[in-house]
Amino acid sequence: MVFLSQSINAQSPQEAKPSFDCTKATTKVEKIICSDSSGELQNLDKQLFESYQAIKAKLDKNDIS
Image (tube, rainbow, N blue to C red):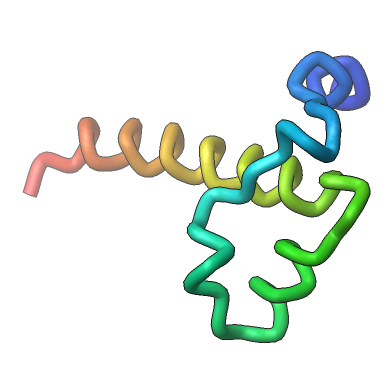
């Protein structure tokens, strides 16, 4: 199932975009993600960011503070 969901969301290296602006990359990790010519790291970064945002939205919605 995980493989299937990743392959559905896969993009070509030309279409790959991380969750941040590569022109503003400053950390070593950001630079590695941006320089990945296969686009795999950029796609994984974007998927991770989207998952984080979805979970955060659910948690914020359930916060009764």
